[in-house]
Image (cartoon, rainbow, N blue to C red; front, side, top):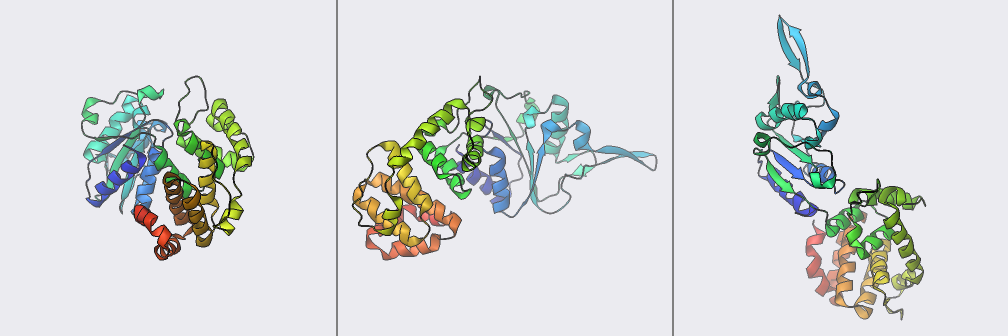
Length: 333
C-alpha cells in the first residue's frame, strides 16, 4: 500500500479501537515512523517511539529490585503508565533474538515483567526488509503470526502531499515531479542514496545553498543540477499572478512544464494570484496540467490556511467551478 493508504488504514484501526498488534514493513527512508507519528498527532494520542535495536533486554524488561525478600521488576520510565496513545516499537527485526523475545511478551501479552500496557494504548511495530540491505534478523514464527502485517511502498503522490505541508523547496519538488523514479532508489555501492527521507534532507541543504549530494548521492545531485538550469526558461510567474490575460505561452519542454506548475502552486500567496494562475493555465495548457496545478495548490493553501478563501472564490467563478468538484476532497483531508 502507499503511505497515504497506510495512514488511512491505521486511522481506521484507531477509530474502531482494534487493539491487535500491527507490523509495518517497508524499505528504509519511506516514512514509516513519521506516518505513525502523524496518525497519533491527528488523533490527539500520545506517541512513544522505542528503537528496539538500541536497547538491551533489561532496558525493556526493567531492573530487578528486592522488596520484602522478593525480586520485583521495575519498568523503564519510557513505557506509558496511563492515558491513551501508540507504543511504537521501531526497528523490531533489527533487534537481536534475545531482545525480540522480550518484545514478544510486550506485543503478544501486552505486558513484560510486572509492567502492563494501559488499556487505551495501541502496540504497533515496524521493520525493514532483507532485500533492502538492512541488517535484520528473522522474526520468530510465533511472533509473526500474532501481527497484522502491512506492506508499504514509496509513492510520489503521497510524498508530494506531505512534502508540500512540510514546506519542501520548490525546485526539489519540481525535479521529483519530473523524475519521480528517483524518489526512492537504493544504490548498493553508495552510502548516500535517494529516499523520501533524504530528499527532505536535500531540501534543507539546497535552501542553505549547499550541495545535496551528501543526502541523495552524486548521480541524483548531478541530475538535479542540470534540472536547475531549466529555471531560466520558466515563464514570468509574477506576470501570470498579476494578469490572467497575459500573452505568455505555456512551455513546450515537459520538465519546464512541471517546474512551472509547481512554481505557480507554491509561490501563489493569496487567492487572487491563484485565480489568475488558474485562468492563465485553463487558457494556455491542456487539462492535465491544470489538474496537476490545482491539486498542488490546494495542498499548499491548506498549509497557508487559505483553503476556505480559495473554495469560496472557485465557487463564485464559473470557469473554475468545473475544476472545484474534482478537488473537493482536498479541501477537507
